[in-house]
Amino acid sequence: MESILISTSRFGTAIPDYFKFLGEEFYKNNFSVIFVFDGKVDNVLPYKNNIKYFTYPNKRPTKINDFIFICKIIKKENPVLCISNFGSTNILTIASCIFRVPHRINYVHTSPHQLKMDARRSSIHDWVLRQRKTLILKGNTHIITNSAMMSDLITQSFKIKKNKISVLPYLLEKSKNNCKPFNKREFSICIVGRLSLSKGHRDLLLAFNECIKINPKLNLLIVGDGPEKNILQKLAKSLNQKNRVTFLGNIPNKDIGTIFSKCFLSISASKSEAFGIVNIESLREGTPIICTNTEGSKDIIVDGKNGFNFDLTKKNDLAKKINLVLKDWKKYSEGALQIFEKKYARHNISFHYQTIINKFQKRNI
Image 1: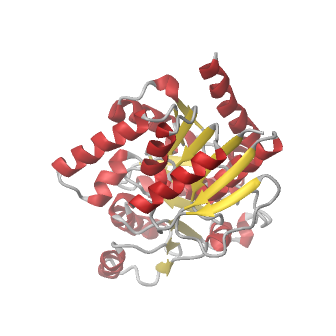
Image 2: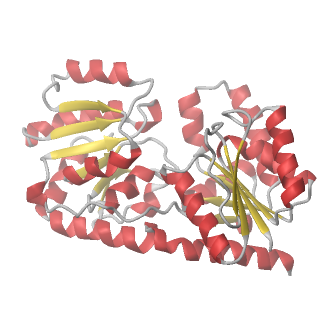
Image 3: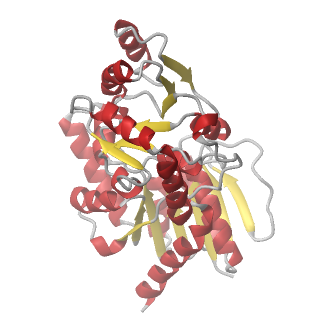
């Protein structure tokens, strides 16, 4: 029985759960699966049939003892495929090259534009990191990413050939909530995500000022925490939005669906976003989306069906798009559910598995 090694974070949030689904699909197709968790997980899951679980020595697996640790696992288990993502990418790619693992995949999650924006690195530092990233990516036999625009960016930024890249977006379990009709929802919109510069909250608060002039009872729920929190709270106060804007802080992943299902609309105001998991979490609840034109939104938003793209720099554009959704909310809600089911529900994992297997076969010809 051939083995697959997947290095990811602990299950329980969208991205690690995607790799859990993928591992289970390999297992169903007679592969042995090894999961290696970053985060220095306590109480690692016990072995189950031909699925094994390990955790790196350090929370962020970038140290020499993490490298030695993963080398020992590869040597013992002899996998035919290693899939890396998050902080383990560098050590797993190098180790799998040294041990000549025939198939090596890196899942690239984040846009280089977004990383640069939030990190605020010098141009020299950014160049050095980009060169290192290029070497690591080229050490893999294949790259997976989450949107078509990200595939283009990887080709442009890291000189990776297009035929080495597959677009396989994240997948989610179906919602346990019943999709609420409009009259059972609050007259609220929400934005969910880290409060960082690239997420566009400052521009959103300014645009929201125009929205409440048109719809005075409209509320904005801001979910998340981060370095921009104090700045945003002061901005909301200066705009006299105290009674219309609520900062909810971090909310457990298991409860995010409740936020989307009680709002009639969700907003993504990001300046750069490789994908936007919160967008498909919104679709899953039948909640339409209004989204800035980012890398990932081009795949997720079907303009006029499950929501709209909007331009934060264009006066009143957000307010106009909100009113378009309000005119035929049921249509956009149904469109959100249909697109989630077709592209982002868990049952699509069999297609993702087959895509990876096809790459194996082509490479072995």
